[in-house]
Length: 439
Image: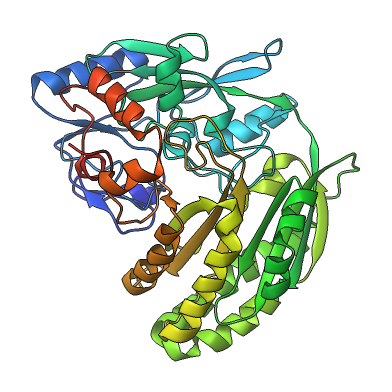
């Protein structure tokens, strides 16, 4: 549990500092049986139940005034099966610990997001993803799940067992039950070569399809108020390993990306008029570099500067139009944006409420430094994304409701029907789920 998510006097707060809740009680079960008993007891007391991970969602998806389940004792690897190439892991395990443990066993996930502070179940339940031409979100790598449902019983599912639950529960939003274990596909550990380099915004957009097609993992960051981006291409490599040298890595990842960036954001918050000038400097601070390492050391990086975030998945074919509109918005609006815009992709998958469900997708993420007003920027950006039938990340700020979401998710009704079956009394309901799934 990150200290950020631990509030004073019984108040729970998320990492971004924009959501808080006061649960009636907190439970830290040490086993699946204890968790099931806590759910049954909550039902007897007429309380709703929510499990919370490390608080890395910016929405109130985990907030509750009922029973808050903390999963920090439900951690660790249950088993590694080298025949099926899967790992079964307890739901409260932080991704960081899973990645390190797998590497020690000579194994790796195929793809991952760009931070690894979250719990396995928190990350998958909200649809956390990295970027990939052929490989999708963390949830798309799930092969089996175990969850405690509203009546306190334990349900397991996979492609063969309870397949209709499996289709939905991989990104279940905490609405179908409390996930207790996840079985993920793994592969022998491999090397990735990362190539990071600046590239003009207009050139990235002109060559976007090519950059996407030629690289296993392509992403870029655009610095608002500038015509500059930083691109990152990750591709499998035969080696040898050439990690970023320690001192150079510290200067680039800690000093520039976190330390100097933090100070630049403090200055920007105090003097918004300085932000465009700061952005010009920020966009040139990181020089080109190439390095080769095991996957989690390439995919993920520390994020110590706190922010709030909105991210939408748009059809991949619409991403360059949406980005041009976003740039026009920033240029014309007088907005001062000190955080880069992050752009990634994912192939279509078959998960009911995945942001990439049934369509090749591109993700556009907008951020604001924690403590600066973000509503005007996010509202205007959201208008652009929704005009392209965008689907909001379940764990990031958005204003969409069930009426909108049922129109952009063809299988929305399938999810809500399953929820009616598994949680008829809405034991796992909260305000957020009422808004996005309907009553």
